[in-house]
Image 1 (tube, helix red, strand yellow):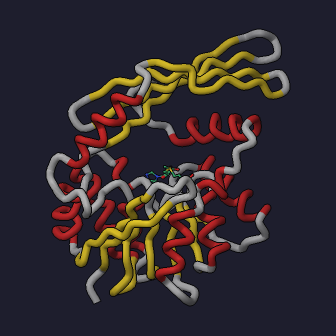
Image 2 (image 1 turned 90 degrees about the vertical axis):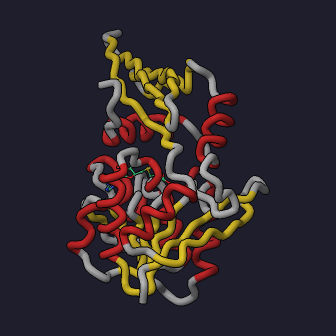
Length: 264
Ligand SMILES: C[S@@+](CC[C@H](N)C(=O)[O-])C[C@H]1O[C@@H](n2cnc3c(N)ncnc32)[C@H](O)[C@@H]1O
């Protein structure tokens, strides 16, 4: 249904696309995992809280972290388990929602989360941060993205939104592939609010008999959790020493990787 993000549906179609698209996503996304490992010698225990299809999970385990993968989407967990098995890695895959990670107290040196800023609602995000804090060993760190201490003013997230909105088509065909007897075309329609852009995904599916179906979901890009707005929330929940480090990525641009620590 439009207006809702159904991760299982998203990942089902993303798996279909990747069967048709030769891009090596895992290699392309490796920078933050490699830079994080350079900061942590040895074999720290890391929870990959956003396993998705397992790209970061495999990379993090290959870099030398002792990884646990976590995702509430059953399709994501199944794909992550398959990716780990293909890579010959023995990594547990769990389904615990971030807000319930207190059930695994003080178990990790690091929690890696590339989708923290996708939670729109403040009370929900506070509960999720508290869950991740509880799962960390004292002195451990939550690793997250989007916010950037080099852009400390209150308008930083909004500036990214304006830039993204300017670059973005209001309506576009994102991809179209045929695999066997199945044809799928994804159209995306974008709609903006003050601190978010909703991307409505419309999947047009045609099967062997010519029967067609339409499936949909909405992905909300959230721009409110910049450094100015997220840091006080992290500190209210009990994190300390919020910091950003910058690293070059595979394309030569710099990206910001943040850490917020559980007090010792
Ligand atoms: C942006 S995707 C992760 C992408 C992945 N890291 C990659 O590189 O391909 C975010 C994932 O977080 C999961 N997720 C979102 N909210 C969650 C929550 N509260 N608890 C656990 N998993 C959650 C979603 O199911 C989704 O698979």
